[in-house]
Image 1 (cartoon, one colour):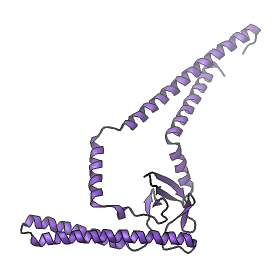
Image 2: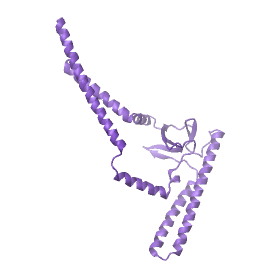
Image 3: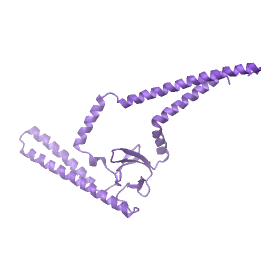
Amino acid sequence: MNFWSIAYLVMGISMFMGIVFVVAWVAGKDILMAFYRRFRTKGCDVFIANSNRNISHYYKVPKDNKFKIGGLPYVTNPEKTMNLSDADKDRIIDALKKREERLKQRITSLQRKKQVIDAQYKASTNPQQKFMLQAQSAQIEVHIKKFQSMLRVKQENYFKDRRPAFFYIEGDPVPKDFYEYYSEMDSKILDNLLSRAISQAPSQKTEQDIKLLKMFLIGTIGAAVIAAFLAYRNMTVLEQITKHFGIII
């Protein structure tokens, strides 16, 4: 093997190892999760939010209609609790009662709001105002029916990349439905956030990640150049030694 073959080999290995290191540093966990999801086709994505508003992501295969995470059970369907312990059943019943109370409060609040709008509609003489009030009343009626349908206990799951996905609050074994917590104010806030995000420049974190990636690439190229220089130097020393002892390579 001559000098240039060694130099190209060292440079190629250095660049390959540098690229592998950068990819592993940036997306190593995501890559492992992708392989895990690929080979465990019966698994589900599980998202758990804690009191600090941090969300943990797991990929689990349910066993006996539940996931066991952090020593706590999280059920996929609250209607199927035959294989659970009495303590877990009590926790599920308590969570379902709180959910029912929360939904009924939302329904009562919307009904009161609809009554106020209907009274304003009857008292108004402005056709345009009556049309707007009628549209608001119809929209609130849709929300009331939606929350009334949520009172029925069922399996609450979404889908992520064609796999079932469940969302929980830490310590609460019953899966959550996002629409249960969604309100008109949330809709306005989300619209404002999206508009602001579209109009803003790239975030500072994104710029820092790009700079770090450039630094790693420059470092990789520098390491390859140094490796080539060292290979050339070693080859020169080896030639001098062989000439000194009269060895022909």
